[in-house]
Length: 102
Image (tube, rainbow, N blue to C red; front, side, top):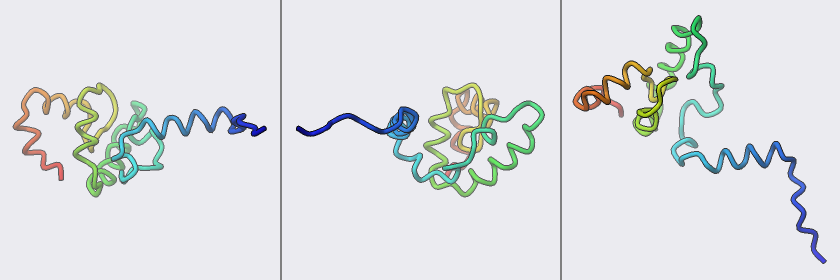
């Protein structure tokens, strides 16, 4: 009889499930492996986090899909843009076109 019991620790199963739920573009993101504090900074660290995110996002090959994924989000830096900038993009799509997300 074959033992089909999953011996993978519960924590690892949860992490694997999380990775499998992510969009495919996450694997190519320049920020892969960077902690969330850069993209979801505490109030006192916003400028530093925005600068760090800007450096990462400027060279990222998936900046456009990331920014698009963040359009509905009210917090965080997505595709190099903070919530206020994404709000302007939603209000005026022409602004998004001029943002040159390549």
